[in-house]
Image 1 (spheres, helix red, strand yellow):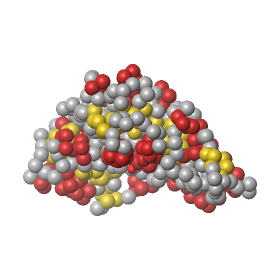
Image 2: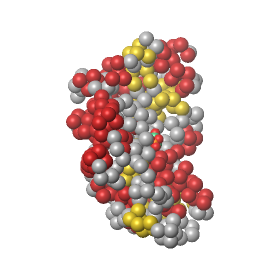
Image 3: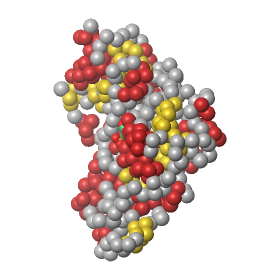
Image 4: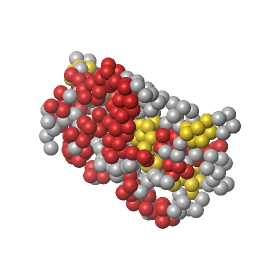
Length: 408
Ligand SMILES: Cc1ncc(COP(=O)(O)O)c(C=O)c1O
């Protein structure tokens, strides 16, 4: 699929040059660039619509509240959820912490266990590690095989009647591998129907069509900034009837029905998780980013990124010095590819690529346990978005070959 060249025009930052070269931005897994319509939406909010929401009777406040709640509907629809099931947070990390903190108050039986996977981002390990430390519980890990795929054939050796929650990513931020989460959730629930399942959608929402109801997860979390929206805004989906049953761990204005010094009655709606003034412009920016994605079509985005991934994979596989991690059929991957150049450090390659205007991510990508499993300090990661082109992939490969020559 050839993307409409107009799409690139919609991203002002793509006009930039870096070290005298046109910017080739392949660090989309870290954060995407923002289309003009998202930037304009935030400027408009502060120029014409700014007021606090939910509590005011004046016109501006009522207008801002309507915009905010309309945005909730659009964001919920984007992941196939009801608007009564999604809370706005600061991002994926914040959403996961919110759930982990809530578990503290659930009075889970002694000896409860939490399960994560070997490919998780630190944000989906550390809150559970802390929870286990504080609750004298055990953290268990689903391993990966030599190709980087999760080993899910004998899940019953890891998930059992003590499992309180399984937290796993839908797409690996380092390897790009798409996990069959629907099938995994089904297996987990067949082993222990009480076990909760949290899906980290940070790397899947920019690339895949999501339907949380069909997926069957209890929690789904993602960040706006990895899908063309501003930083500092994210989402926590909570399956009904958990919304009311999940204890709140953070409280304050906006989360309550009535307050006296003796007793407080909290909301039983999803807003109970949104204490304090929210990131209103972030919410509006996220809804605008979703309008952008819907106007292109998430399936067209996925098809386009797959073409880039296929080309990059083919070209990288042809370079003898390159070793790719998670080098599986690209149809099982989202637009992310991780590799190293033999006998070089990823930072050196990344620094040289920058000289040619190519922005890639280097390092452990907040997946140190995965790096330990692969026995490497880090990787070079190229990750694609709708505005990237095959010409950019060719440029990147040429820049990489020049870098390899310089380093050898
Ligand atoms: C898979 C995954 N989970 C969680 C996070 C954390 O996201 P945030 O920093 O937006 O909270 C990231 C960010 O890179 C990620 O890729």
